[in-house]
Length: 110
Length: 141
Ligand SMILES: Nc1ncnc2c1ncn2[C@@H]1O[C@H](COP(=O)(O)OP(=O)(O)O)[C@@H](O)[C@H]1O
Ligand SMILES: [Mg+2]
Picture 1: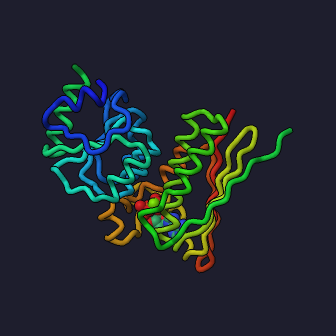
Picture 2: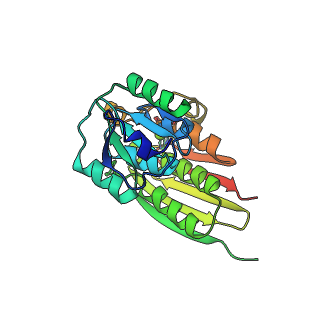
């Protein structure tokens, strides 16, 4: 599945999209950033409710295909600008982490 | 024999949100040098954890990255409090980070273990009240 395909779903809203052709191969969900760095893989979707700007640095270092912020958590301009600057696909959803992952998992394995 | 290429960074101890600038920059530099992306990923993640540690635990420091023909060496130096018990600090989950750090998603006690697992060699030299120097090596061959 590509980021573009994911964004066709109503639940997933684009906040910053730098490259919607990125392929999503699996994912990792977590809010503790060292766990994310230890376990998430390249081309994963990174699902989290963390909204501080370090999330974007972590996403960039891992080279995930996109970040999905759950629970419609409020996004600061600082976060959005960092995503733009580091060319990170940033997506938000009203879903809770569990539901977002269940949905993403179905899509990825379809 | 070509000589090593060096990069030097100063990590600001006050600015937690900008921690990672050096690691993100080294990622770009290594890409320009044509280093394998899988290696770049390991180097930059290990360095980021080290950078974050210097900000959280040691009020900043410096990072020197030396790119040799056969390896990349990262030397992170600070003049912080030092690490009381290195063996304990290396354990997954051990952390002395304050709560505000945890609220930002750090302080899970997985930083030093990540640094070790993403590199081919890691050495910690630390002295209480003087500071800590962590040297990490990632082999290129
Ligand atoms: N540069 C440093 N200076 C002083 N103490 C450090 C430094 N780096 C790590 N530590 C100590 O080692 C512990 C474990 O580090 P780490 O595994 O990165 O976990 P965390 O940063 O999440 O606490 C820290 O909580 C801290 O007590
Ligand atoms: Mg740490």
